[in-house]
Image (cartoon, rainbow, N blue to C red; front, side, top):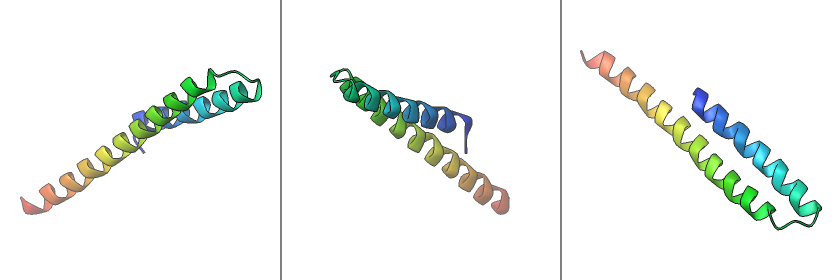
Length: 65
């Protein structure tokens, strides 16, 4: 898995934990953490998909030459 995808996944997990803690304490700030978790999960998915496509393109390009 690409490094940026791992970083994004770590941010996503930490944001979810922060959201749970905020909601348990009764703070509405948890909504911001939920939005950040959504953004981070989308980034992780994007970077993983991009790396997978690059690997597929490199594999297909190497055989055609």
